Length: 538
Image 1 (tube, rainbow, N blue to C red):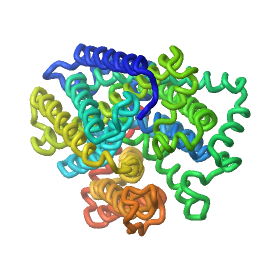
Image 2: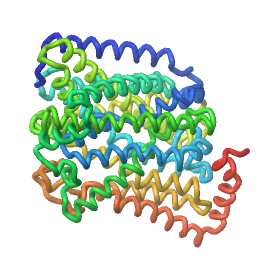
Image 3: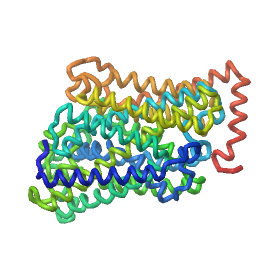
Image 4: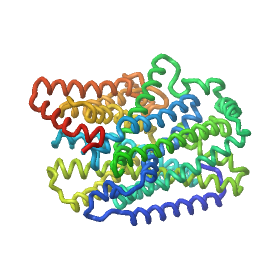
């Protein structure tokens, strides 16, 4: 259990209660009308570029980024630095390559983008399946981690009952936010989160630098000593190893992060809430600046945790290092039980809490929107569902997705499920990224190619992940006592990303040979919308 005074625990509980009360009130007040789909899915397109940029950054920065990346920096040094930089680069890639065409092509969900030139039930169903495949694993990771983190923060016994209660509480709140708030309500929560996140992280980073005389060199030297790795802390290999296969795995992970994180459905869905192309361009500028700043703060906080807390104490509290920023705040606050420790620790705990709430709410909304809009309204009802019915379905699918995520998180709370984060990002890089880039930029892309890239890329990532070192064969795997690791890497991107693109190309070439008329029709539809898609021209 954590070690702090009862006064700190009371302060943390008061802060949590205040955050929940304020965010719930704002979510209800900003909630959409019961029969207005545009309001539910896009928030009436009323957010300014600055506010929308903060909301995009809030959706993009998940609890995994805040906690896991900081922990990897603290325990693996250089490997964590590269991961933080790759996280920022992914959003830059989205900004320059996909953001404007996505805004021009999309309406509410990823299915709208993909079905623009290839309408039909099969495309909508495939988009929904891949959306769930990418968001549900992320939800399970965040909720299962929330149980352990909140018991640590609240100084509760680290037993199954306490962790399950925390999972249920967070899960219930995320369902309420998604079902009642819609896009506008969750956007407000994301903005609150990003302000708290940046402010608190900046204070912690400043205190770290101040402790070492504002000298980055002193921080790095202390981190090398505190990590126990010496000069290896600033060299590649502490996270995955230094062999030839391990280096390929490291490259694979970075490729997956750069291509996959920004293509996740809950991130791309936020682009459709911009008024027009100039607005989405300015929104992404604010989002990139915000995310880049935060990734820099993550590097400073993680290095500070290695220097001031030490890897031995960090891994004793959590082998993945997810509590490193919380432990760092206790060291920086001053004497045990002092006012400084209480204030700083409570602020960091509140930052973690609001990050968990907002992250899972955004993912739940993306999954529920795809089920209601792509599967129910277009696949089941062939686009004939009235707005009020679709809104009702969206609310109830939020409940269904949230309940399923809560149940799965409770079942796997004792497992090391960090691999599910990698799986979700791999699906984004291997299935969503090929489908979007081909659909937006290739005139010869066909329905068969689209289905092949979505299903083929997702299936390849899932199959390789099941037989990877992340699932079995190593002490840190999900099943450490089993040994069926036929794929020698922990990230599938080096194989599954090219496979997703190849599957889309082969499927389209097959259509060109066997169904020339359909291929010409797809090409005609693309050319008719090409000017608006790429240049926003009517």
